[in-house]
Length: 90
View (cartoon, rainbow, N blue to C red):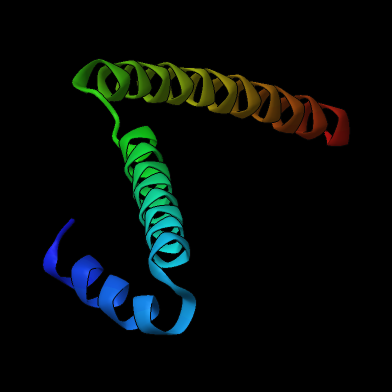
């Protein structure tokens, strides 16, 4: 046990008795370790690998190309519509 656990055990021992104090300290220690593991696991899941970032960059580049294709297509369609409207108005 670390110093704080020993101090907790000593305080509880006088109030609860030796066995109960030991059981309670062990329970608290187990809960604290479990919570620390959960936090570490959660932090690990947040971290992205270099490969993840590279895949994301590729997807972004592909999306940019698709947007440019659509914009060019829309511009051509609008240009044709304007030309057709201008010819019709004459």
